[in-house]
Image (cartoon, rainbow, N blue to C red; front, side):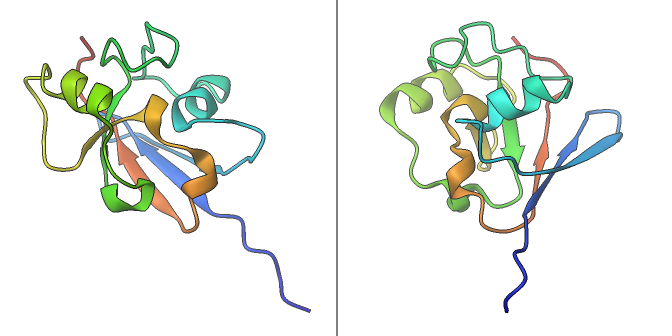
Length: 110
């Protein structure tokens, strides 16, 4: 019998502190998962509509979650701290997390 391996997301704050959480499939997005688990650094002002950019994060493996949609691209374009591995956590589906991953949060959300 094969053992079920539950992937983990490690959230790294700007100060270096970390929260490691096992992925719970009952959540729709990484943003919702983080908020429900008390992870700071994600403001999520628009509630997950990709119209504010306040759930910005930096991915260790940005390709795990597929291509960036136009709305997400537009919001990321407004971020002065955007990097090649920037994503909006509201647009990242937990169902795409198949292996352990790390998400770093910016010092300031807009």
